[in-house]
Length: 159
Image 1 (spheres, one colour):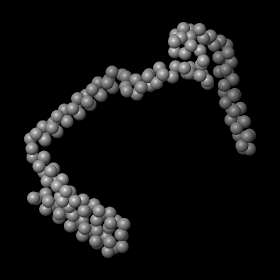
Image 2 (tube, rainbow, N blue to C red):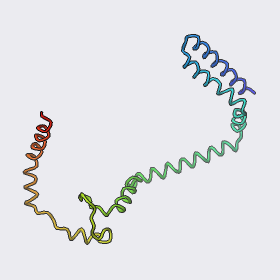
Image 3 (cartoon, one colour):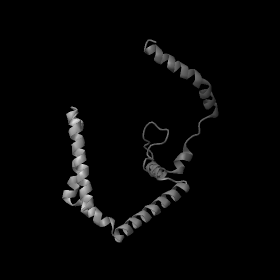
Image 4 (cartoon, rainbow, N blue to C red):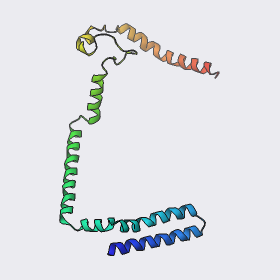
């Protein structure tokens, strides 16, 4: 009974504020305030307030909230332990995705058409290793190449 009275008073006050706001020619705001102020009386008329008041004072309801809290605590504990173990859900997901996408080599620009995932380490061992001299030449030419690329782009745009 007390909850219904409080909700009715809140609705009446809200409608009064909406009327004052409408008097100041702020009709959109007044309509929004009126809509919010009608919610408590609507909840009273539908019986939601009585239902909430009924469950708020039952021990079985509070026991249910306690069980939900325990469930949440156990869930968060397992998440914390999972984070400490070093493997996260994202890492496991990435590993599964990598297993599915083994048809494309990591540095390849096109899918490999060889034996695929069945070759495994044997295919990796059969790949020729790059020459150290070629790598040194690449490193020496890399800074000059970067600037020449930038110069070409600037010339292309007329800068």
